[in-house]
Image (cartoon, rainbow, N blue to C red; front, side, top):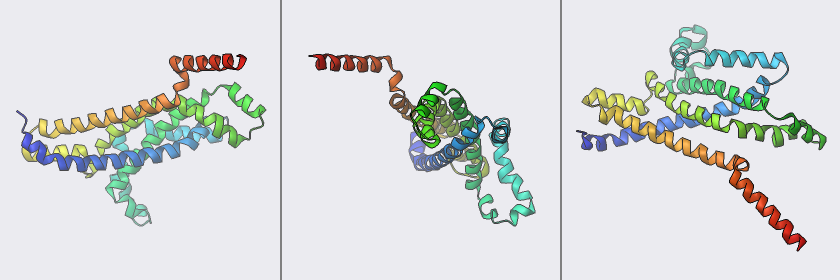
Length: 247
């Protein structure tokens, strides 16, 4: 039987953990997205000098577990006296910053590869048409290149954000009190599974559903031109307009 009185009692702690999870998720996802855009452009460039350093970064990050990266940043870097004596030490001794940095670097690597793949699949005809219209390189990137890449990468990027949300559970290993840490504390104090890890699972599931719905809405907005029903409606409206003009 589930002890509902204990569940109600621990809800404030779980909501506090939810707040920490959301802060980690949103800040690391936004920072990773901002960093990934120029890196994706470099990753898909023809120049090896631009392409290979980014490839090395994404290869190393994607080839090692996130937990190992987090431990290296939080436990490994303080072993060096140069780090402890540097101006970065106040940040690198903060568990929240270390977790944020690990999550940001990890999602940057995956997001870079996602957008680089979307950029490489850009139809050459779109670029040639934009250049024929006299658009500058900056205008081509802003108005043609990036919008198309964003639309193609959106479904995969939504999955990456969900995976990042799940990965925030690792922050509990460096003393950060987020959803999983709250569940572990409840289990340690009361030795009950449904009220501890079961509640944590409910919160993670609710977050997964929410993020999925948000990205489904974004996909409907940015990819509505691929919907056969929308295309049929647009064609019908155009034909009606043509008939009205002829009339």
